[in-house]
Amino acid sequence: MPSERIPLSEPYLAGNARRYLEECIDTNFVSSVGPFVERFEREVADYVGARYAVACASGTAALHVALRLVGIGVGDEVFVSSFTFIASANPIVYLGGTPVLVDSESTTWNLDPGLVIEELEARIRRGAPLPKAVEVVHVLGHPADLEALLRICIHHGIAVIEDAAEALGATFTTGSLAGRHVGTIGRLGCFSFNGNKIITTGGGGMIVTDDATLARMAKHLTTQARVAGRGYFHDEVGFNYRLTNLAAALGVAQLEELDGFLVKKAALAQRYDAAFQGCAGITLPPRASFAQPSHWLYSILFENSTERDAVLDRLNRAGIEARPLWTPLHLMPPYRKAEMLGDGLVSEGLAARGLSLPSSVQLSMEQQSRVIDLVLKGFQT
Image (cartoon, one colour):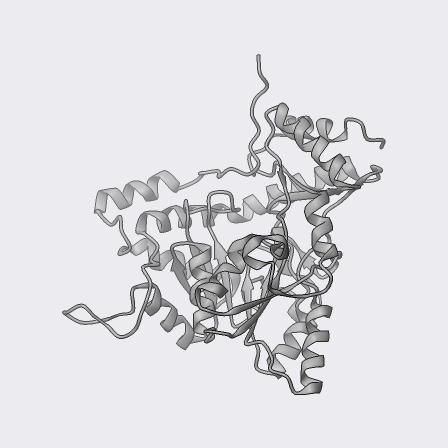
């Protein structure tokens, strides 16, 4: 009999999900108008400690609007991680902007703030134009090192946008940002509620900000820039980026479970850590002292791509879903000609050696033990 399939990261629709969805159906509020949309916005804002939140159709839509709100247009440079899912960079191009890719740091696997600061200081010395924005991605749920980068960006009027798609619930623990959630540090933060994220609306996203004007503009743009009134009058080019009431209802139910999900994710990470700690040939995921990650996907590094691929094949043959880390953007056809800060070796190494393991909140201890046994097969501990 084949072994039970173990997915990489699947949703867990617990709590009030069915009741809230049935309420939408019973009241006929199933599209983008309905009480759950505003409730979801308000409760996400409260959870992360932002003044405002605007629901969107996807995390990519949230990034698109956020970049538009800070004025990204034709030829405007935006610094962004090369080691990230491609949706982090694509909205820059949608707007005609120019992505400048940044290599990762080995400490967090996120954008290397030292490379950005070095480039900004060099441009300032020679009087060269500065980027209009820096988009910081909190990769795999681990907060990026933002403190020093934020200071120089604020001083020189460079907008900081946070792509926190994978990091809802992650926080900073030390320094001037201690106690704050990712997504609330820059001018705008963006979250994703895709089916594989910590909480899901089936597909959806959220923009958060403390700026009332930006929040109002975000709501306007995501609703086709329609001006209130009897007729259909639109004062600029907007987007059909609204979240449905059905999706928001699921989001509200999922948000009620989030703290419990984060505890379960942390417990999964601790068990993986204990199993792989001290194993020759396996490097554990980042654990920076300034951060409390969300542990979205537990990801490890092997000595080389050959060992990584052998483990990946072994897991897949056993019905266990695992996933290599992203190919850096600078190696993909759409972005091969983009300017790059750093030599790309850190991000290339992560892509070649990295593997994400099953991380669903409902992963049982028996299932996790099966994953661990197959990963460790052939390794000395």
